[in-house]
Length: 243
Image 1 (cartoon, one colour):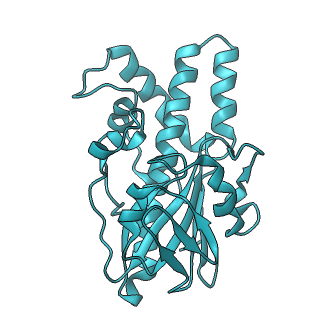
Image 2 (cartoon, rainbow, N blue to C red):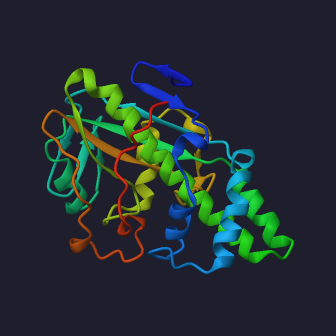
């Protein structure tokens, strides 16, 4: 069940266990494929994973915009009278959307502090792995949240597109200021700096297109020139587990 909800604004605090984070996902995020990581990496990840629940404050949530409140163009969309310049890649995927889910996910501040403490103590490898683990947790929280969006809109006969975030596919990070203006103040405990970076750092934000005629497809890496995008790994798809 949601931690809190008001109309089409919903917030959750899932447990680390609910997200399905496992050693293979973490090691794959480090760039190792087919289980080819050194034994030391596997051992460190196995040591850190059981400590994860004590260092996360996972919060995630979404706002569903009213049906018909968005208008999608060739390289942008307008929501509640505000224009977002996403570029053509994202705009093309939103074309048939009649609404949007605006979402955020965060692991909180404790993971950053844990990583910094380990590095300050001279354990650079563990500090680096905790940072990578935090990135995986916030990604899995966003995947988990997708399924909550699916459940929420199912009675309306709507479906979802892929998730899209400022900073990817030609969508400027600075447009997070606009996105956050459409969410409750400090939603899920996240704030923005003047340069549009999120605090806590290990947070994600973005949009999901909604409507009866949209579909969730493969990410179009072949037509995007962002080489270090996290989407270039195998996409896990929406989470299947229930709260």
